[in-house]
Image (tube, rainbow, N blue to C red; front, side, top):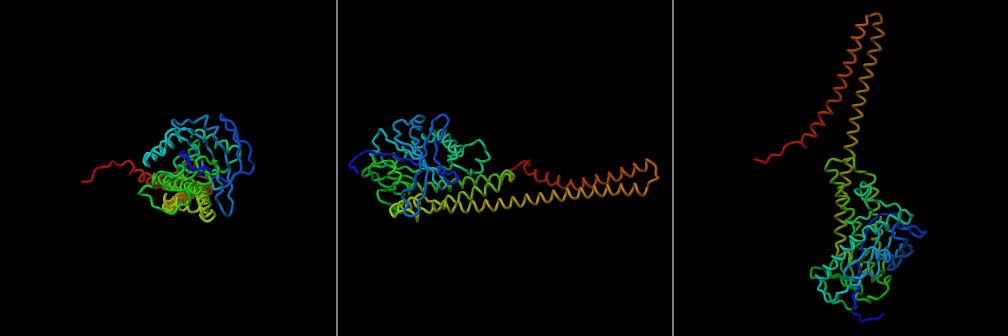
Length: 400
C-alpha cells in the first residue's frame, strides 16, 4: 500500500429497508427500461469471521454517470449491495475538486449534507427504476412495504424517510478531530468517529473499492439497522394516526403483522454481526451503534410498536363487537318477519270464511306490527351513530 498521499476519498453509504426475501441464486442480466442492463454478481460480507452471509452486488457506476451530475465533484463509482437481511446499501465514491483536508469539521459536515441531498434528489428515479427491474426479474422478491406505502399503490418502495446514511472520508493521517460532543468509544483500526454517521479512515484512498467497502462494513451494518428501526417508527406513527382519526378499517392488521415480522427478522439477522464479525470490525461496529444511539432507537421502537399492537387489538375487538351488534339486529329483524309470516298463516287458517276487508285488515295490521318492530330495532343504532357524530360538529368556545 502506497502511503503519503494527500488525496481524500469521500464515501457515502445509504441504507434502504425493503424487507425482501433472500436474494435469488440465479444471477441473470437485469434489464432497466431506459437505462440498459445490469449484471448482478454474487458477493458476501467479508468482515464476518464465522458464518458467511451472502449479498448480491450491482455496479451502478455507468448508469449513474449518465443520469446524475454533481457540481464540484466527480462520481468515481456507485455500488449497490443487496443484503440477505432485507436491506439494500447504495455506496458512492466521490472525489472533490477542493482539498477537503483544509476544511474544518463543521464545513466538512455541511459539504457532506449538501452532497447527500443533491444525490438523493438526482438518483431517486434511477434507483426506483433499478429496484422495479430487480423485482420484475425475480432478483428481489416478496417486498413487505410499510402500511402507508402499501396503501399508496403507485408509490415507490424506496422509502426516503426511512433511509439513513454514513459518510466516510478516507485519507492518509486524517487532520480532523472528533467533535467534543461525541463519546470516545474504542473503535477499530484506521477508524476515527468524527460525528454520528461521520467517520475518518486512516487508509489509502486509492485502494480498490471492494477493500474500502469491507473496511466500512461494520459502520454501514449499524446504519442499516438504524434505517430498519426508523421505518418501523414511521409505520407505527402512521397506524396510530389512522386509528386516532377513527379509520381502523383502513388498517390491515395481518399486513402490518407481516411487516413487523419482516422488520424484526431483518434487524436481528443484522444484529448477529456483533458476534459473527472479526475482532477488529466488531470494535468499529459496537462503537458505531453506540454513537448513533441504536440501542435507544430499538427501545423506542419496542415501546411504540407494543403500543400499536395493543391499539390494533382494541380496534379489532371494537370491530368484532360492532359486527356482533349488527348480526344481533339482523337476527331480531328476521325473528320479527318470521313472526309476522307465522301470524299471517294463523289468520288464514283460523278465519277462512271472513270478508276480504277483514282479511286485508289482518294483513295490514300484522305488517304494521312487523314494520314497527323493525323500526324499534333499527332506531337505537341510528341514535348512537348521531351521538357519535355530534362531537365532530360541535362549535368550540373558549373556557370562561
